[in-house]
Image (cartoon, rainbow, N blue to C red; front, side, top):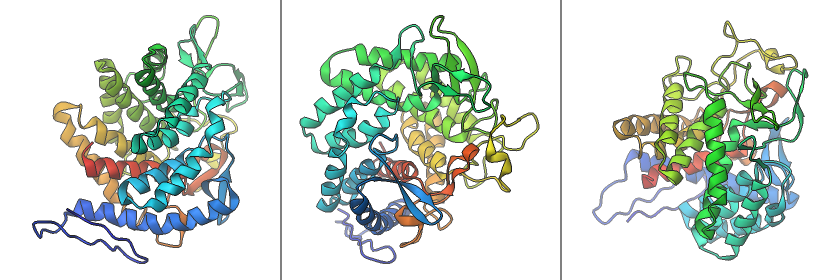
Length: 411
């Protein structure tokens, strides 16, 4: 058995195993990150408890927060649950419980599609680790709220409310973004625990519609599809956070790999597995992916044939930022996909481990007392708004910790 202890400073891993063997380098790497997280999140937890808002990122050296209705609120309690899962320290369970239960009113939130991020990453992990029945009803109500954004004519869940396109030329009346694949896990969960297949049906229809319109022939992805609610047809295929309408925003591509992998797990439908594999292959074989496997925020920045929409401010950047959050999401997705992908599985696991090694290095892992308490550096939120460029972001941390736990358990 391996026991772990955490102290201030560098890694404090105690290796006590019944055969007197040393732990392997992967276990040591995971322990290093969680040791850092214990120290960093102790700082972050103190700050959050004072503000009673959800940590999001940093700006001008100061920690930034979001309110209860903002889409990233669930990543903070979710990360705390991962801390508890690894350390088994009641401190993190107590904190995770407090911050999860603070989100309870969001079970009725129908203002946007991100109820899955908000509630499944918090309450879903809470239920998985505690089996507390009171969390089930909240998750089911959250799924009901998400389903209210589904339009059967379109066959997809509406992501945003009416929103101007990035170039300001039109108003998107029914925008659906690739990110929305991530919220389907909440619906699959609701069907499993209630026996009501309505939730699963909506999730499958949404995934099918995404396959139909979000993917190009090479299995790169568009960010946003705007639908006609009368005919159900796609009106526009564009970007909001990628470099150009025809470019590949790397976090969006990672959302797709993760979302279709999860959808295959929940359905056993090989169409979704094939989509996940081909989207993953596009990502990991991309000629513009750097040798450390941490992608730029978009694969096609400043390349010939890719023209930013009007009002996109990323063109004003003097360098091309990385997005460590996209890498963390992809690593977590690849570790699961490796279990289903047959002979390609070993390749996916190897790439995931390369990503995690990079993220665990000094180039991306924050030093204790820096980075406003977050663990990952060099994430990019919305380059087109010059928002959270080359910053820590809570969802980057969340998927990094998730990927490390998946790697440890080989799940």
